[in-house]
Image (cartoon, rainbow, N blue to C red; front, side, top):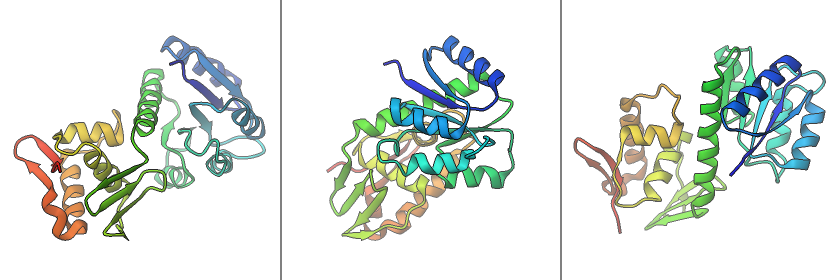
Length: 228
């Protein structure tokens, strides 16, 4: 597969350098747009596999572009990595709330960016390989709607709890180490600790109530959802 990457960036020197570095890291189909309006039009035309989106764009700003992309049915599931010099926590949170899948602060390493792109493409491919609905006894997980239900009632899960439960439910009986869970759920470049995974599992068990015994701890290894 030769994924199509769309970069929406108004700085020509950054566009050229990033495209060259991505080409050197194996990404040969890199399309570029210099502003939000051009980027939206190009995205609709080529339907890329991933979008690199600058926040500080002339005209339509990057956050608005992100929201428009996520509200377009043909583009809603295309991963978006925000590229920006604004590294404050509130800016990152706002970008993620608008629908961005990842956030890279300038200046960035070309290798780190390529790794982040690879993570998002793998995650997209993994989602496409999954059945869109996972059913395990009274548990039902709708991957498209990002909703998990137990006995028909929605579970109030955080995004990480949902992803962990979906991973385990889609592989009943398989044991995942904490590091494997981190990699599959968050990717390679996140400073998530094994302790954080333990806390997510504790919360999942609490929310699953009497069915929590199916979410098993394999001592010294990790976690699994009991097979049927």
